[in-house]
Image (cartoon, rainbow, N blue to C red):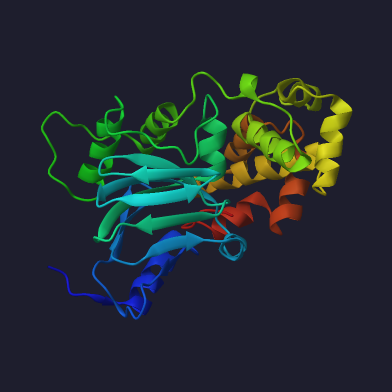
Length: 314
């Protein structure tokens, strides 16, 4: 059995692996019975988080401090976890899982017994742009879901060093992300059930639609207005209320997706490859793309990849 860790050491490990999430110790608790370890599934980070802290939190300050944005696939190994996230309250039991968005606040409350969860870190822009449907953030996938066991076996066997069954073959990281996207897609589609509300809700819904259709040519202001069931002018007002615009929102997120993709390619990011990625994401004018990239990241795409060859862009 592992020795207890001092709370500060446990907290430091959590930050270094998962970003600015912080554990809340129980009254007078100095030692944590558990640990936070880093693993890999190909290029994707995997965190093993075990402990008997009171809870783990993510607040607005933590969100602002992290450059990188992720969608975390969480699944519970032992114990019970109460999750408050994305306006949902969910209880995760062993072998149940959910998606956590690093750009939104969260609170993960542990049961009285030490809990153990696994977190697969997926670049947010890449994950959302590749999703065929809107994915459910903060809602759980039960252990009985037909894809639950397959996804968890992949991570347990090939990231955590579990015993590999003879009939289990390792998926690529892209295939694993595709499985997770499919498992958490709302096949009924949330859009027809959308009811326009206050501007803040409308803005969040608009951003959700943009992020999940980022690489599609049909992504225009008129298309967005049709999906939101409001007029073009009303959509413009929604963005103005948020000190943003449709064009800026699309461009900044497309640039982020290009940055994530180029960093995943690494040394293969030659000029021709960069142009190919930019075109795929939706940029049709390369001079405009290069100018926008430098404005957003302070350097050219090639320089950015060189500086971030081992990290995920923010």
